[in-house]
Image 1: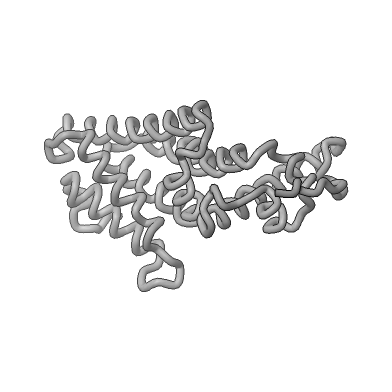
Image 2: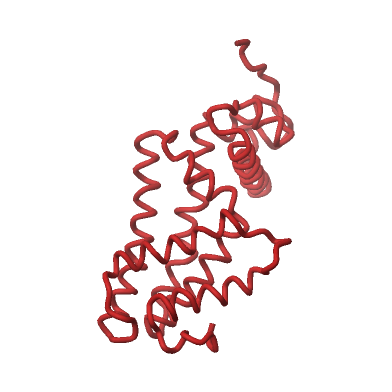
Length: 223
């Protein structure tokens, strides 16, 4: 196979760019690359996509792509970080907020769904292509996921011990909750029969009220 052509980067894409404005442009460009790569990984499969395909999808030259990412695996790693590390950073504070376990978990369910829906493609790629990561990157991504799940399990356990939630195995309850929450990536579409707010309200009732047994959320008045 012929080597990919190396072109000179356009202004702002090279390593010589410094200062706040170029740094901001680089962050925007990296985000564009990650989003475009996720789309074509989802469409064609990670193994079938080359760096040139990604560059063409973004509309940049081949050499410019290497100024942002050294390899295709690094791009996949960045895709996975958007739905693991960023998920932890944005959503776990809801579990530490004041309120009962049910109130904190209801806020978390909303935050999780609102975070995941616009990143459904990245989420699907992260699930299906995890094996393509390097061992170190896979261990890091797995660590973020395990920590996220454990924090939710701890809140469920607290609710069970306080009597707010029905007694059960908190680990199984957390697995079941994440099965429901993460499944939105496979079926929800903005032009579908339900809008996101309806899904959020319904899932709060289903998970916190019906599955876990919180009386406060059982009938949906507080969802």
